[in-house]
Every structure is written in C-alpha cells, then in structure tokens.
Amino acid sequence: MNSMKGTIRLVYEDALWFLGKFLFLYITIPLMIGWILIELIFGIPDDATVAISVPAYLFISMFAVMGFRSLISVAVAFGGTRIQLLKVFYGMGLVAVFMSILLLNILQYILIATTVNNRFNIMHPATFTVEDYNFFSYLWIDLMIALFLFGISFLIYCISYRLGMKWSLVIVTMLILSGMFLYYGGVIDLSSFEWIWNNSLEPFMYITLVGLLGLVSLFVTYPLMRNAPLNKSIFNAR
Image 1 (cartoon, one colour):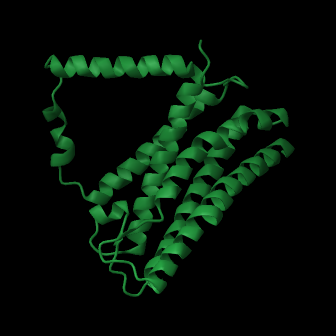
Image 2 (cartoon, one colour; image 1 turned 135 degrees about the vertical axis):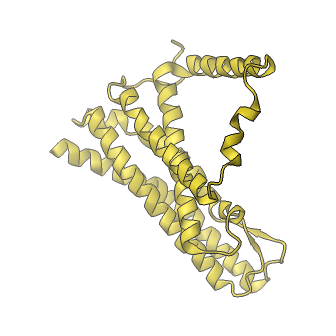
Image 3 (cartoon, one colour; image 1 turned 90 degrees about the vertical axis):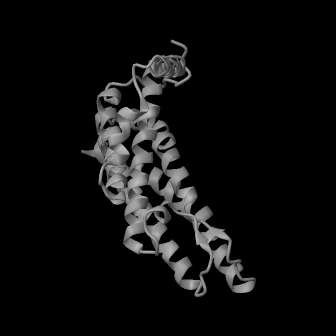
C-alpha cells in the first residue's frame, strides 16, 4: 500500500510540475494576460489570430513521454512495480489531461469575455466545425485532441523504448516502402478509403473517434511496458 501511495505521489508531483507550473504558470496564463493587455492598450487588429491552446497540445505530448521516462526507474527504486506505475500513470495522466484542458478553456473563455470587441480570430481546431464560440464545444474538441496526443505519443515512446531507436526506424521505413510499392503497384488505391469521408458522420463524431483512438493507443502500451527493463535508452543499438 505504501509503495502505491508513493507511486501516486510521484506521478502527481510530476504532473503538477509539468502541466500545472510549467505549462500554465509559466506559459499559458502569461500569454493570456499578454493578449488581454494588448487588446486593452493597443487594440487587436481585426485580422489578427489569437492563440493560447498550442502550448497545451505540445506539453501534453511531452508529458506523455518525459513524464513517464523520468519516473520508471525512480518508482521501482522506491519499492513500486512497473504495473503499479502504469496504472497510476494512466489514471493520473488522464485526470491531469482533463484538468489541463478544463483550465485551458476557462482561460480561453476569460480571454474572449474580457476583450469585449473580440473581432480577432481564435486559432483553434473548433473553428473548422462550429461557426460561433461555444465553451462546451471547444472543451470537447480540445479534450479529444489532447487524449489522442497523449495516447499516441506514449505509444510511440513505448515502442521505441522496447525496440530501440534503430529497429523502430527500420520498421517505420519498411512500412513506408511497403505502402509506396503497394500504392504505385496498383494493389491499393486511395478510393478504397472514400467511405471514411463520404459517410454522413457529424464532425463531432470524427473528433470523438480521434479521442477514442488515443485512449486505445494508451492502453495498448500496457503489455509493452509491464515487464519493461529499467535504465534502457531508446537509442539502444540492439
């Protein structure tokens, strides 16, 4: 039980430092305040594009990799197990992602509400699916994209961790070459995938599927990492 509590504490402090302090305290909040001051003092031009969500996407991907990499050896050294760390990282990581996205959207709402004459454009993926700003629509889209980035980034890291950088690159290169030969050899055709964009699914359904893909990618890493060796570099030349 003590080892589980210690593992939870490690992941919690890592998430708080990485996403709480580093992302919001040092980047996102100052960025939001900067945009508000620019609007109040100078006025933001009509054709300007305002964005505060980009750092969150980047840091969530980085947390999926750097957060786990910095903890695996420490957690095991203090009596925890790989399985404990994985379960805690999944749970705390998903909670941290959700809270980060919620805080991001609250800050984004404050930015929009504070600038009364908000004639500027918001750089956000939701602008491709909804015409007018809606807090819950933006929140859902941000959350699905964040889940995708968190899961995919962690999966790519785990594959590289187990196989090493050399074999990971070899496999990626072989897959690319195989796809090129199959496509130009006439075995596969892009028309085979027309059903993806020709069906009647709503844009929010696509976004939701993207988020579910991220969750699947995250949990697929469990069999990869539950018996992973310690102190292994992804640059291992095996």
